[in-house]
Structures are given as structure tokens and as C-alpha cells.
Length: 307
Image (cartoon, rainbow, N blue to C red; front, side, top):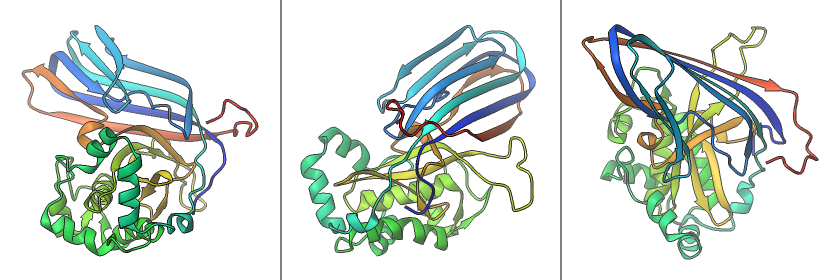
């Protein structure tokens, strides 16, 4: 592991604001408004405030175990705001890439196939809408995760080769960009790089999932951290004989205790932060997102209830 480990406590504030050019008479939405409990994190407190007040706001666990929220608003409005505030304890275990080298990619795929839940294997090994295993994708994956490569070396190669081989460029892609377009342009954002990492592992026969959440960021040296300057983030997770291993090709390392999970699924479409339908005579809208991930005093590492 290259980043910080050990228990950490964070306060996360995530504000999403839609502004419409004409009144919206009804709004129906579904999204992931609450971080999920995981083996690496424990949600201590959580609050969601929606303006205007929804007529319906319900929550259930989706197929992947994520808390999924559904809302309906029937009050005329030209502005919709969702404010999420969360306090969460995070503690990611250290991952030994050298330990994973006890397997090759091929032997790891065989070991996982013989020991994991067949439903999990099917869900996270098969192609999905935004992780298509086309010939160009398989060709790229074959150069990064060949069957004979030691597994730990292959995991590192996936996040490092994507980090060095692709430019991070906001606006270069959209939420519907396909991997073939990414391979052609060699530029994208965290969502695209997570999709490509997932595709590499699935091409090699290893189940892999797309993870959505947050990461603690730091301002440039000598500069204050600006309010609202953080952002949502995405990375990949692969199932190995030692369990799930999370990796971040956008930042060239494994996930660590700076990472806060909201939801996971096959690709972005499964974990879109908010999607829905509105009824309006208007034609345009604007979206503003503000995220703050604030470090709090660390939890007691001897607390038996910590993650």
C-alpha cells in the first residue's frame, strides 16, 4: 500500500443544485444519497435535506447492497437542492502486492472461479453497458494483465499504465463515453479510467466492480483548502484469492484510508449519484456540485466497533 492506513474520521458535505429556466411541476429521482457500510468504513451519522420538501423520500437496498433513495417532488420549483452530510470512520487494511504475486493472473482467476459466489462471479465478470469487452479493449487488457503475469504486478500495472498512458482532462468525455472512444482519445476522467481498469480484470477472467465515493484531497503547498473544492470520485475493485482489492488508476495507487465508499456496481450506470425525470416547459438547466471532505480527530483504534 502506498497511501495512509489506519483509522480516520471524516465529515463529508455534498451539495447538488439544479436550476431550471422554467418551473418544474413534478420531479422523480433516484440516487445514492447515503454511503454504504463496508468492511472498511462505518457510517456514524447521516442526514439528507431536499429543497423543496419531497412528497416521497424512501430508501431501500438495491441488488448490489447499496442504500438507494427514491424521491418525488410535486411542488412547482425552479431550483432543486440536495444537501448530504455524513460522518464516517474509515480504516482500509494494507494490501501486499508481493503477497498477491503468489498467484499469476490465470491461476488467480481459476482460484476465484472455484471459491467465490457464482452470482458474484457472473455479475462482475460479464461485460456491462459501459464496460464492453470489445476487441480493442481485450487487446489493451492483454498487454497489461496477461495470464502468466504475477497477480500483484498485474494489479499495479493496471493502475500505473492507465495513469501514465492517459491524460486527465475534464470535459474530454461524458457519462456515456465508451471504452473504445477512451482508447482512441487517450484522455478522460476518473469514471473512464475506472471503467478501463474494470475491463482489464474482466478480460482476464477476474470479477471486478466500479466503485463510487469520495477521496480526501489536499490543497497546493502553502494554499488554503477552498470550500467546495473536493469532488466525487470513482475507482475499481478486483476480486482476488485474498479478497477484494481497490485501486485508483486516476491517482496511481491502491485505495487507502482517504477513500470513502458511496456505492458499487457493474459500471457508472448502476451507481449514478442522481437520475430521474422532470416535467417542465423549460428547455435548459444548470447543475452545480460542491463537495467538502473534512478530516476530523481520528477515532480510537482500540474501539472494537471501528470498521
